[in-house]
Image 1: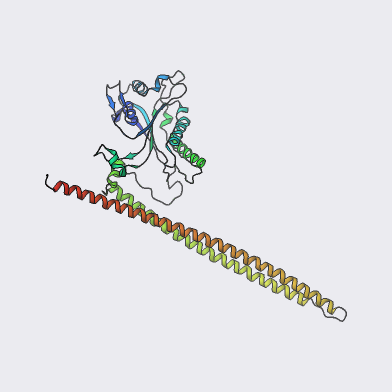
Image 2: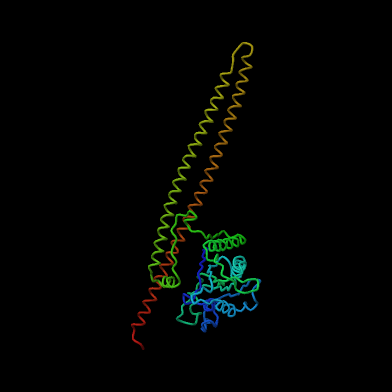
Length: 387
């Protein structure tokens, strides 16, 4: 299931950070910072699956080199507390393959940042976690699982002018309006790709409250808490999220019951309306019959003729009323079949959802027991005397 995530944060010297160091870590490279003389070596970092420098048309060709670009950025700032870069962190949908994810990110960067004369340093991380206790990852294939593929987009904080030099900072980039626009454009870009592939999934940059959804959002766990939870260690943040999920499940159940009550009330109202129509049709048939019976005038010259006319009209009225009643019955039966089919579908979907929830609970309990057993085995190994 696709989940929307876009987080923007500054890279500032006030925080003790540098654009060169941030780029080296995200790209998994070794870069030297001429401003402070530090060398940042992250060549052993795993999980980096794609990197690229994307430049606007007026950028110098030398900026295509990652070390040259970010050293130029560092040297363009004189203040000791200067902000040197801006990072946009986005989650990538698992519904797309790696090539489609890269294409989507490149198009998003081109439309939103290169058009503003920013330089962009893209690093896509596969988001896979593994145990670091053993360097032989082939022995841990069963615990190497895809987590959250995401992209880090490192942006220059100054735009380039027509001559390819860094100009004054654009303060509009710090406003809430720009951030909301970047978030909306990322959601729209993903939804457009989902629609192109014919996928029945959509994401939104808006909160539950803005969309009118009566649900409480869960809190961000972070990679450390996620790792502890996967090992069966319960945390305060994990407990908070579990409580939120349980509250949301209770809200959904109450909403489902309320909708079921409304649907039952609607059906009762519809049945009463149908019964009223049937009674009206019967009364109308009776009135037509009475009308033609009362119209028979017995006289010597035309008694037989008027009687035949009355009988003929009476038969036509009965046939017309019978046809009207049959049409109403067919309509009622058709609507009832449609409602039964809808109810059956809803019940089947509810049962499937319940089975999925029970399956996830059993899986979580099984993983927790396995983690406890592994922990007990490790404690026994530590307590046993060395051979």
